[in-house]
Image (tube, rainbow, N blue to C red):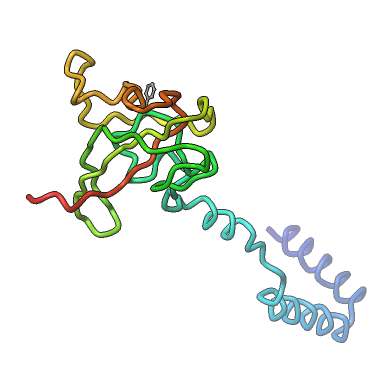
Length: 171
Ligand code: ABN
């Protein structure tokens, strides 16, 4: 036991002989200064910005996920030089249409939507969109959207499809 005491005493004395009180205070001061400056270091906020970007945005007229397209089957006219409600230049709307009922998450109401094919030019080929909500098999043509509604037009080439709101669906 005595030898252990002697060992500690010896090492404490040798440490004391090698370091002054001033150097001890300097080291303590440095440590305190470092702790005070720690909150001022730059923080990586990029990851938070990335997380905000990852939040899903509401789909617009050029996206197949747009609420009005719930029962569509065709190319979106909004991607083909027209809008979601108007045919592109050089095409005309079909008088007979396929009708669906879509829920608008923006106001919580259901809307009756007419899907008019735009006719007179060859297939647009951009933004193909098939959602088919409420569609029935082809043997019930009036309830099926997989038909070229331009068939009654003078120019029966199908180009794209618009979605026109006809009214609010009554509950
Ligand atoms: N109603 C859109 C469409 C047109 C042609 C062929 C299939 C579907």
